[in-house]
Length: 405
Image 1 (cartoon, helix red, strand yellow):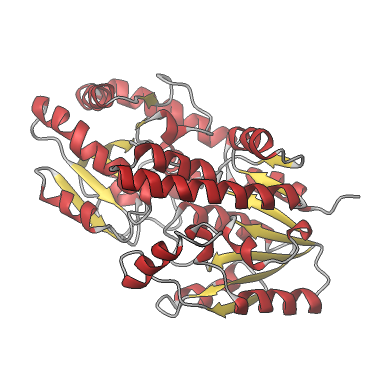
Image 2 (image 1 turned 180 degrees about the vertical axis):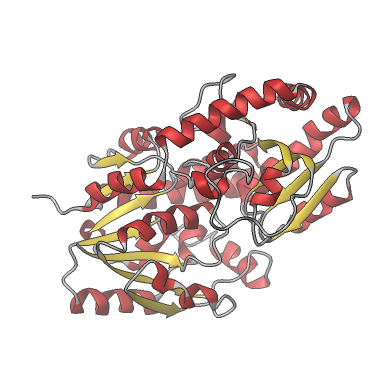
């Protein structure tokens, strides 16, 4: 097939879940299909365009300034979001240059398939009915949860406004798209029910088991971590400029961490992820907590941890960090929202806890009972090793890209 893949960003440095999912899929599609890739180029990250050849034959970079979320320009976008019919999360990616490049490329090449990766590039595609929409999340659901968890009445009002606009935009795109690929059957069901989308399929999240398995396990890794694993009791992995991760770790630090430290004062936690917000950076002032920022390789932090935590109250799609932790043979404790859309059995291959007291108790249980933690980790590893390799996942994805007969 001749495939045009449309996304907001290039895939290196690969430090977000959506990038990982797309990169692993394209790495396996590219050897057998002609992949063209259209995305915004970020001059501050030249690695992105320079390494595009790893997953596509032709790359089309578009120049467009995307304000950082801590900048005055982003604050101006938030103000414009009061009157714009588009949700801010979509409007910031709208670009005449992108739309023109899309028109030029599609006029020059007879593509068998066009993939719109995430909802956001759809603002630049005049006829989404030509595209397969790759939905990593149900975006409106995320904003609904922001509105529920907002810290103040003003936050809840603004998030609620954005949730309504996101729902309207998402509904229009989902109904018009040629077809939709969701990352879980739960998301697929939600899109059918919420938007009446008739052509929704799901492909589960995968994981590179050999990449994440510990060095002591076999077979040996071709690309082992370069640093000695830093030892810590608990670890959280995730982009720390993404609001659901920020909310989850602030909730954990405020409501759960004191309960753990009261019973186990020596407990340590590493928060590992790109671009920590000022509020996340401030958590490093709490006893036992470290905040790493961007790291070249997350595996040493996983392999050096006793337990991986996913205390999310907001989110959508599926969290790759859970399957990555399972592949690294680290036991996982998550909220139900943090683990939604994934294949798990509470008490067998993961622990699910939604209240501060239950989450703290689960952490203390696994830290105090190494044998129990090992049983949980072994069961989880068997699950991902047998059922969720990227090769198997990509075969499912590829079958959904073929044009209808």
